[in-house]
Length: 244
Image (cartoon, rainbow, N blue to C red):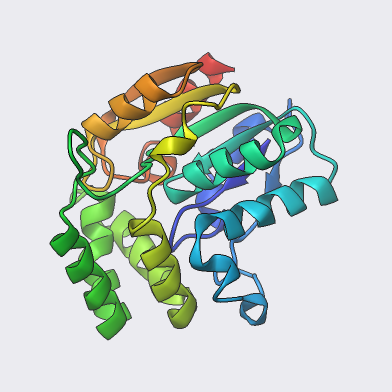
């Protein structure tokens, strides 16, 4: 069972979820380049200008530890990274668990992604100018649990720890990506976990994913925010358990 974290996070974000499966699965956790304990010197601007570079890393990690027929659990942008990894090496995963995924953040004709092009550019410009200020403003809104400020503070700290140069490039790669065309030919069993309210992946996005993944199940958690692995781990575990 391979757990992949979202933008600005690291493998520690799975500490409330992954242990629930350790009695039945060998769990594999890792940090994307620029996050956690990864080596920022390994970053290559060309390789990681598209999500395929991150997907190639997932394939390499899985092959290094001999994963076959496994379960991929990807949060946020890692949901799409997992889909790309599956398409590159379908033997790795028989199931994909996609937590708060989005194949495209920008609104388009007959598609609701949640953001206009101007909003995304404003967001990226803010990050380019002031990573700490961006983190302090965005993390609590993304977490969306004002009654539990420690959650927003943890996400803020995590955003701030990411290598600044890599964070700016990863954010641009993430928010300008369009992976809608990659959904239709995914034959693996897929679970789409959607939060009832999520500013980064609104309900329309979860419904879109469910419609366009041929073998998918949609689970809507009665919670808010974009990080249920931190804010609602019991509900997240229950949804995964029911699917598996």
